Length: 468
Image (cartoon, rainbow, N blue to C red):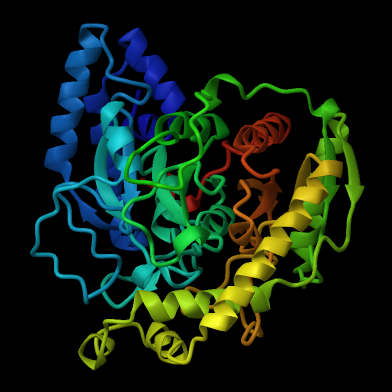
């Protein structure tokens, strides 16, 4: 088996090969590291690479497998971590020159700790915009990350490094974050699967600047791999006070489900969003695939009123608080757009923030009621294909959100995923978003798995990744 073949294997397939003794964790890790060395100079998907630590971890895993005693569910699987998530022994610079790398890095965040406990091979940290504050992946510290399907385009953000890595075969699993679409946007733009878990499903520590909007979750090339990671990273951690009660769900063991029982709402514009014609056609076709599987699919043009004013008020207060200690010395080395956002937050009002909380609660109640009728909601993940890597937003999007399909479900804390559903005439990936009722991550993963079985997406790979 060639190193290229190994690099494209899913985590589930790697584990089967370890079990059968036809492949070792050291071979798998070396294949990923070799691929990373060749592709990262082009993609700029990683800001930290630690081959020595990865191979040491892989050798320990190989010894356990040789004795038939794997440590956990992902023993020996190469996993990358977004550089927003605290990782023991590695600096977490958050894409910012304002973070001092010369300090003790002595703690793993909960999700990283769970991955280590299950034997994962951590090999590097993926790029992020500064403090994950943009929906593209460019920062003063690490520069611009590009899309492997077309390196003149953005992979989205803020987990763009993770999306570019997974799409290119640089590891089967990436741990990422999402506070407004930061898993789902790059999943759509990079042609991979990404799942934003329910609020409180995956413990977070330390708290992010985006508070309860944020969540940690998987980006993978298959739904089964994401479900496997969810089985590992969900559950109790005493550092997360808002964690949902652990229910012991082993997501990877319960993916099979009967779509005939589902009643699904398909909303092509959600709340009046503008959608590129190619994206509209591809996502409409994808939604209809559920009807072909036997589900009841109804078009619901308008799900709720535009919640962008609510998000803007809410984020303004969060920004004011998160960056309250920063001054001109830090601003001088920061992303100018982020600095402008921080300056604009200086007059944030407590009354406005609390008003946004009430509006958020009303939106949440709306969606709880909505899911009394519909099991699932389908939308485009993003209304546009990947755009130029030189831009922060699509042309013509100034003054409005260009990702209106994703951020509402950070406000409501519902589980939501993006599945690849086709390509534009230019060969650019498009994603379908699957949104589930509050706390029902399993249903979202089951729906994504059913779609993956009906419309497989793994065979097509970026040209750049096929050239090595």
